[in-house]
Length: 72
Length: 489
Image 1: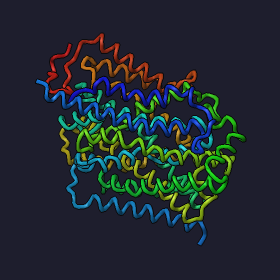
Image 2: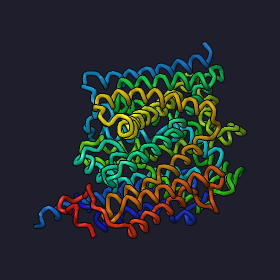
Image 3: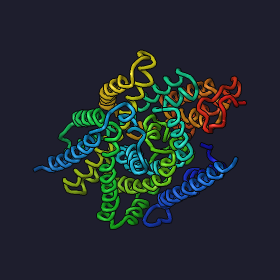
Image 4: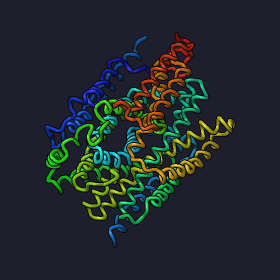
């Protein structure tokens, strides 16, 4: 088994930027979206984005693996 | 019938049905150690998802998250962020742990440390620390159960008696069923928990305020600072949020039981797909947080925030539905408690007792000893839960600060061939000492940062530096087969 490839790791950093390091920019109440305070809504949105990022990383890893197995 | 009797009978029926499902699942299988503790490495995507959701969505997520939304406000959002990011981290770690476990027959976290670093001391140390820090986690579940029964019985059944009943059921259930039984009960638990979360999180705001939006408008007007960080606290600002989210996301799979779950999978691929699907489940937490925020307006002035969700339910719903919510809560405490008990007792029997006292003990002997340990650990945490008054989140944060100190040992062990056992031991000891000193002297958060996070940084850098100055060691568990175990420079 090969270690995670660089592109896959970079994709995994995106959710950390969205949900963690950027907190000063989204931690506020207004505007309410779908009835939720902005910070709560932002996190819900990023839960979905994180899932998408993982799907992309999985795609990258699978392709990476295939390439590896055909190489001499 | 009084409301207390109605609510309690519903709770007991739910727990009874849950246990029955569990008992039936274990029947007809030969129960050796591998089957009992990791279900014979047979779990596919569905079971894996159930087990992982089973151990993550604990009574902490149920009562603790709403409790923090109620008593602290904004900082409670950290829970949604760290669980999601914990799955992200798992994508890059668990499949590799599974692969090595499969190839070298590892069953526990401590097996990994012992074999990777060729150090029996490290294996022993990791299991002792793991069992030690998992006790607060177990205590959380029991305290939660106590709260549920106390509120649902309208204060007629004392908390201690209810915890005793619960701990007995959990212990016997684990004793006879093993890991497969636990995964089956998770099905019922998850269905009920989603039902409870949706009904409280949607019905309550609609009933009292006419919708979720008016609820938050009211809250923003009456408690203008509650919904953002640091909320009702003085110290939990953005630096605390970032450091706590990183710490907890890294520690998410460092618990002996969450780490061990990786071994139950049928393949590493299942674990990757699990990391894609499971974050979506975190959305159900939004409704739990909404309930906590609503409780602040509807049942203000509770001294223990952990009681807010159920007090709100008791005030809003008829007794039978309070029973349904209480039953969901009871299962969310019992399933994780069962998983923790199972893992911790296997860990103790296999990685502490056998190497120290009975090196010739057979696998069957280990399995028998592990089952006795289930009872001992259950009683210990019951004793602790009786005498402790800390909130659920505080207990969890203490455990996280401890188990996350394993993170450098796992990540460097997997991906950095140059790492040495001396480096890992030095980092681990320093990290544990720092985290426990700061937390026990009540200096957490430390200058606005999570104390466990600072300890983790110290641990990581010590491990790297010490590894570089000590002589290189061969890697007995290389990821790639051709990466021969001597080619380390």
